[in-house]
Length: 217
Image (cartoon, rainbow, N blue to C red):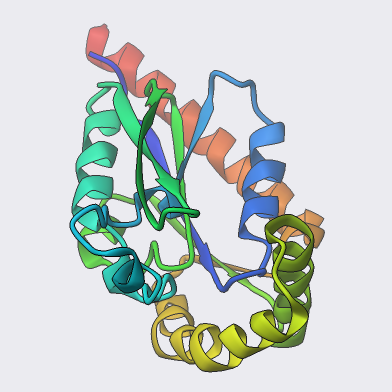
């Protein structure tokens, strides 16, 4: 019987540095040790909706996510079963036909703006992290990403931030900070916090290994 993987939730607002934190932690371990499960891949399938309805989707609202599937997949990985991770097509605003085959690993990092919002999802996590970055830094990062990588105009990014992203952050994302075991200010730039996280993961992995020996002994 394999040991149960260590499950870590990494939440925080858009542009907070969640992905940088996750990558920095991942780089400190061998490839076979850690897998990332991004909440962004689990937006709901919208095949049944006409395009004009899909365009109205609020991707910063909890209801945009298929948490049932995310929880089901996380449980499968915890029980050492592989999954087919969905892929989201942002151009078509619905789920793609493609999937990504994911094998279970010793550490699973569940990353996304609202991964701490769902109690059932939180209950599967061993360590809950909130990446806390000032709003002005987050909006600048989002502007740069959306303009450079997604071809958006400055005006459209600002409008979306004011009308959707900011109110959703204040209503749904920020309140989940209270569920965090660890709050990391300034995201990927906080090397001390990332080193501490990596040490904590190493400690948990080390503790699990003797357990397995004792059970088999």
